[in-house]
Image 1 (tube, one colour):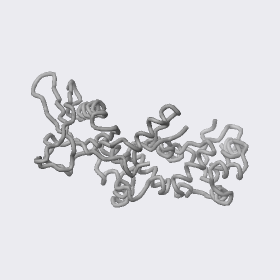
Image 2: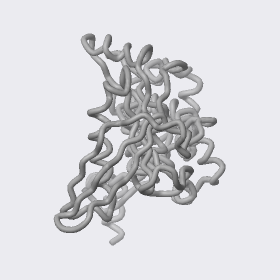
Image 3: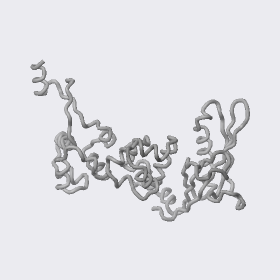
Image 4: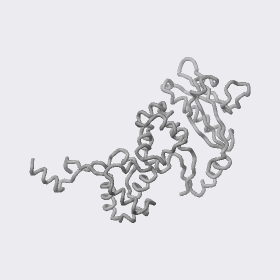
Length: 95
Length: 200
């Protein structure tokens, strides 16, 4: 792991986790009990998903196997880049 | 698994706040919400579960409560299996709710400042006597000045005399705290009895 951190938006967090689990937007929406349109709007959010109601945020995070407490602690907001990430390679070259 | 409502949200907040010995203002400041806003949650006129995740999580964190547990009803619900299901149903229909308040020694004084320390459910006062005694003795020993080497006993609840000054309590209990050497302290506890109506 490199020492380079990347900021993850709320939408980015949802998209990355959904793809990691191999789910479609529709599947997540159904699991969370929201409409597809609603769910799609969450994936477009930068920061502000937490202004949605507790019930919705909990349902969506749980559907994606994410932990609401960790989200509240902003633990998903930063991601450490792996060594083979192109950005890390570029940074190394600059150094 | 069926889930059964055991406590209201506002009771969870009040209990957590009093356990941390914080005022409403201190919680509001910690959570960065307006005092009136926070008070509405404790009155039950607003609900954390239907407010924004952001606000709710700030308040829960200020009270030392876990966001995930709360969001999944962990503080208000009891998970029941088939066998316990029937027992839990009894809680709704017939059981009474007993709220235990700690006074500052004498039950008749500073009544408005008494703090809620426990909520128990039972068919009647006799059914909860053991749990109430445990709740009271545990509570006494949780007080900061009684942390080291003190022991406590509590008397079973007694009906509050109608000629007593304090009117809000149905029962009172007395806790005796004893140091290893020296004099005992006596602390009165008041108990409010509520019937199960209106809960489901």
